[in-house]
Amino acid sequence: MTSRQDPTFGISIAEVFRLGIVGYRRNVLPLTLAALGTLGTYAAFRIPAQTALNADQLARSLAFDIVGLVVAGVAAFPWYFYALDAADHRPVDVGAPFRNLDRLPAQFVASVFFWAGVLLGFRYLFGIPSIVIAVLYAFYGFVIADGRVKGAMRALGTSVALGVGKRLGIFAIAGLFLVFNFFGATALGFAVNPGTIVLAVAGVAVTSSITMVAGATVYRRLQAG
Image 1 (cartoon, one colour):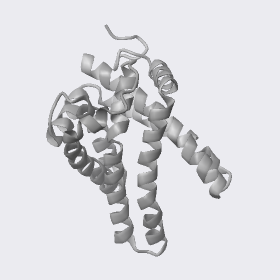
Image 2: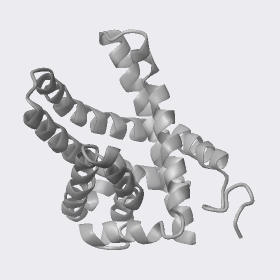
Image 3: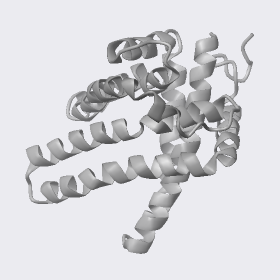
Image 4: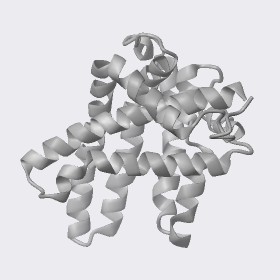
C-alpha cells in the first residue's frame, strides 16, 4: 500500500530524508571516509580541469572532468555498499566492497556510460539529456553493490526498470537532493580560501552521505514495488 503523502515511493519525502540522517548518524565514520575518498578523487581532476578552462583549453578541461567523474564513480564503489547497509539498518560491513572486487569492472563501465553521458548532455538541448540520463540510471551503483545482477549493462538496465512509472518522483527527489547538497557547500558563498574550502568539503561529505543513504532507501522501496 502506498502512502498518501508520496504515492511514488510509498514513503514521504520527509521520511526519506529522516532515514538518510538516521542511517548516516549510526555509521558516521565509514560513510564519511567513503565520501571524502570520492570527493577527494574528483577534486584531483576538477582543479586541473578548472585551470584548463581558465586558459580557454575547453577540450582539455572537458577531458579532465570526464575522467575525474568516472574515476570518482569507481572510487564511490565502497560508498554504495555502506549506504545500502545503513539503509537496511545493518552495521556497515567495511570489508564487503573489498571482498567483491569482481564487481569493480562493472562499476567502471557503468560510471563511464553514466558520467560521460551526464557531462556531455550539459552541452546540448539546455542540459535536458543530462537530466534524462540521471533519472534513468540513478541507481546503477546500488544495483552493482547489491549484487543481484552481474555486469554494467544489466545494472544500468535494472536502474531503468526500477523507475518505470516513477520518473517524475525520481526527478523531484533528485532535485531536492541537489539543493540539499548545495547547503553543504554554503561556506564557499562567503569566501573562497583554504578555511572555507575545508568547511565546504566537510559539509558536502556529510550532506552527500545522507543523500546516499536516502537514495539507498528509495532504491529499496522501488525494489519492493
